[in-house]
Image (tube, rainbow, N blue to C red; front, side):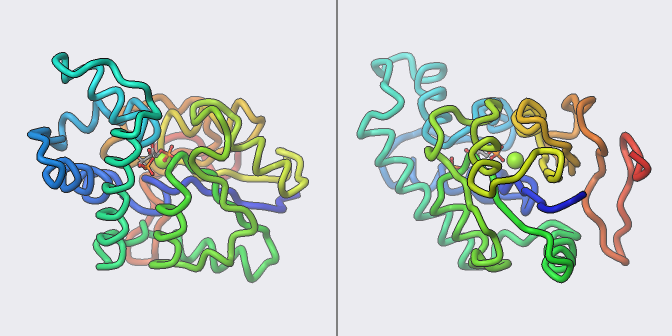
Length: 233
Ligand code: XBP
Ligand code: MG
C-alpha cells in the first residue's frame, strides 16, 4: 500500500540546474574575481558529480591545473559554495525557477489523500528549503533530507535509507520521483520504486531500473509523454 512519496529536488521539482545553480556558480566566480565560466555545455559534464562543493572540487582538479589539488572541505570551496547559494536563493526569491508541470498537482492530491511526503536531495538544506518556500511549503514535508546529512551523496543510497528510517517506513510502501541516473541508482539501491521525469540534461541517461519514465508529470494543457514503462507497472 502506498504510504509516502519521496521527491528529489533538483531537476525533479524544478529545473534548477541550467538557469539556477549554474548561473549562481558563475555569479559567485565573478564576485570572487575568478575567470571561470561554466557554460551550459560544460555544466553537463560537471553534473556527473553530485553536490555543489564536490562539483567545485572536481572543476579545480580537472580544469585548473595551476591550482593546488584541494581538499573537498577546504575553506575556499566552502566559502565559494556559500556565496553561490546566496545567489541561487536570490534567483528563487525572484521567481526565476518555477515548479515543473504536475508537481503541485501531485503534491496537493497526495496531501488530500493523507499520503506522507518527504524530500531526498543532494543539494544543501538551505537551497532545498528555499525552493519549497518559494513554490510549495516546507511544512508539507515530514522529512527534508539534504546535502551533508549523510556522508555519501547520491548515487549512494544513504539519503534514501535516512528518509525511510526517519519516517519508519518500509521501502515497499513508498514511491520516489527522480530526474537523473544518479538519483535512480540511489533510490533503487535503497529498494525503492522510482518514477523518472527526464529533462534536457538527463534524457539520454539509462533508466532501465525505473518503474516509469516520462517527460514530465503533466497538466491538462500539457499531457505527459510516456518514454518507458507503463502505468500498469
Ligand atoms: C543535485 C545536485 C546538487 C545541485 C547543486 O542532485 O547534485 O549538487 O546541482 O546544489 P540531485 P548544491 O538532484 O540528485 O539531488 O550546490 O546545494 O549542492
Ligand atoms: Mg535531481
